[in-house]
Length: 123
Image 1 (cartoon, rainbow, N blue to C red):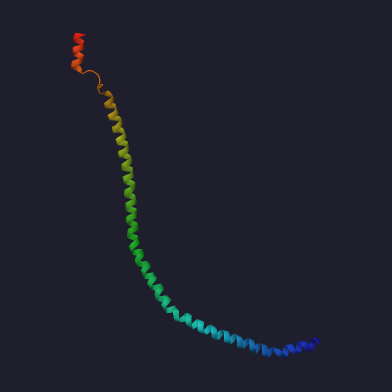
Image 2: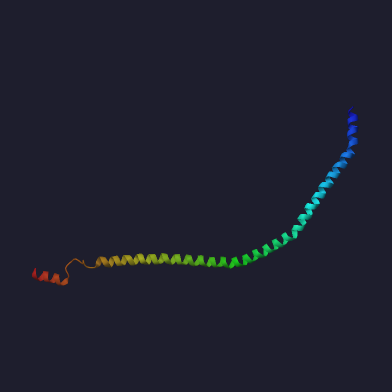
């Protein structure tokens, strides 16, 4: 019986192959439409990519000088920061000198030279 089953399966094989081939052809036909649709979109995509490339080139051309300006501004800011530190140090030294000078001034509540002379003479 097994041989009979095998022979029946072999006999059905051409029909199954024909059905499989027909299904493959139908699916290829459906794919052909999709491929055609995609192919029709490709020129527009290519134009958009080209346009984007041109825009990016223009953007880069505009950005590079800006980046150079930013670098100059950063260098200038660093120099200014160093100068501010120098000014702060000079102000600190000046503050110390002013305090020293104020400390050497006579007491404002003390009697002046004439009052001291009178006290010295009159006792």
